Image (cartoon, rainbow, N blue to C red; front, side):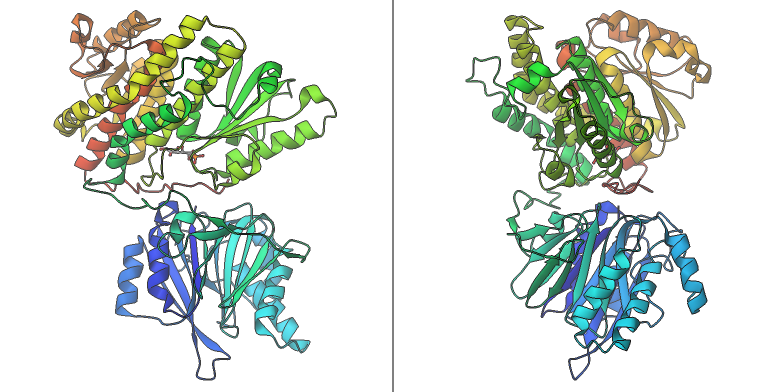
Amino acid sequence: MCGIFGVIGSREVSPLIIDGLRKLEYRGYDSAGLATIQKSNNKKFGELFTRKSKGKLINLSNLIKEKPIQGHLGIGHTRWATHGKPNEKNAHPHVDFTGQIAVVQNGIIENYRDLSKSLQPKGITLISETDTEVVPHLIGLEIENFLDKGHSDNGQILLSAVQKVLSLLEGTYSLAVIWSKAPDALVVARRQAPLVIGFGEGEFFCASDTPALVGFTRTFLPLKDHEVALLTPLGIELYDASGTRQHRAPSLLKGTELFADKRNFRHFMLKEIYEQPETAQLWIDRYLPSDSSSVNSFISPITKSTIDKIEQIQILACGTSRHAAMVGAYLLEQFAGVPTNVHFASEFRYSPPPVSPNTLTIGVSQSGETADTLAAIRMEKDRRDSINDPNFSFHQLGITNRLDSSLAREIDNVIDIGSGIEIGVAATKTFLGQMLSFYGLTLLFASHKQKRSTQEILNLSNDLRLIPKQLLDLIKKHDEFSKEIAHMFVDTKDVIFLGRGINYPIALEGALKLKEISYIHAQGYPAGELKHGPIALLDQNVPVLSIAVPGLVYEKVLSNSQEAKARDARLIGVAPSGPESEMFDHLFAIPQVSEWVSPLLTVVPLQLFSYHIAAHKGFDVDQPRNLAKIVTVE
Ligand code: F6R
């Protein structure tokens, strides 16, 4: 949530910051701002300039064209509002009472109310409604103290003042600070919200995420929690929380080059839907190569001895990742025979189940930065570490699309879903990648625990290998069909999605996609629940979308769909074509596949259906209102 980008060097920074922020806009896009420091003639001091605007980054970019600001040092921010409405006043950067210090922040300063009260006796009143604004004021006061004591290196003064103020802040945040009297210093800090430093040629960058560095540098250093860094045009100084200097080698960016290339697609979301066959093929080439006859060919980061110990699995995730986890839990329990629970990470934090022995905890997060998921995993680690019993040790596994994320850094064993960067805020190809990872884990557990015959395991592997081609055909077919029928649903207010068994999470995911991007109210239910309440909603104005795949619950879903039809609901089916499918008013025909692998296919028509309705309504599909791609606040 919120994107930070800063530069210090020898070039004009405003266009660089706008460029960096553009690649971070997926993190928040309700307002944006930037501040620069333009050096005075004696080069010792400078002057602070700020520009802010409500709405998307394009508004800020236009404002800067109209009213340019200069300087070789600057910080920028794209916001997802937490405290205070998205308007110009609340947009970052926030400036202190002297008008010389500017701060951009991501995260939440939880004790900002107390801190703002402490400023009142000093005659400082806040202009904005944000939690951030206390920070520049506190830094301003600390700087005054240092100046009174006769310190003279302004870069070091800024660093020390920030370090002092950080000790007062509670919450999770990353921030970047500049001061007009230190025109060669940019100070950055991190506490549980991501921040990386980029190493350019004669210039340094700070950014909330590595893709923002693409085009500037490939060399970067992620800050660790509680670290603070001073960036100057000559180099960086890195310190831990105790103020001890740290030395770490930077890393090289991998695989983010394709960032922000929409190719010929109208939206990133559509492009990402089309990339799913490739996501699946890459996953199969990597984890389930066809030349392998071994049923154990899923390459796992967990050792056999750990698998042998595991008696149950708990999965922590949010949103779409949780839906992938639910498909995973179904597979792990029903195919591999391992008891598995899925938790909302945000709920688990405050109501965890009693600690169970020999449990594998899996965190699923495409971004690897979701605050709730990270906090739930940390909490689980702490409570297990506090029990001095090897049976209760913390066995951990992460499933993520970002190997450079906090999740990947904090968890020892990680499955890289390798979907390539996803820009559309509504997750599509990463959902597929997450589900595939669970298929891999299922094969692994089923074979190690000998819960399935070799033939059953081979059948599932072979069915998975057919998925890329089936996806390709399905996307081509249903892109056109969804476009054709989308106009019939643009005025719809509510849609019910039904699924059962392994396709119940797909009903939830279909409903989530529709809500997110088309703002149509949609609810997913296990089909059997329809008669226990939701059926009261049905009439000719409430369409029902049913996912009916031949297998264990096929007939049941068809009967539940008939019950909806009898209440005049328009029926949309995601099912193989045949006599049974004639009941549907609109049919997204899918191939006849084993029920086990069906979620990998049934989700695709739902993604396309939501996409085309939203596109037809003229909505900003890639950046839906009120949402952000990375949710780094609780
Ligand atoms: C929906 C969506 C969100 C995320 C959720 C968790 O399209 O993208 O529901 O799935 O915010 O995000 P990650 O997977 O990054 O932890």
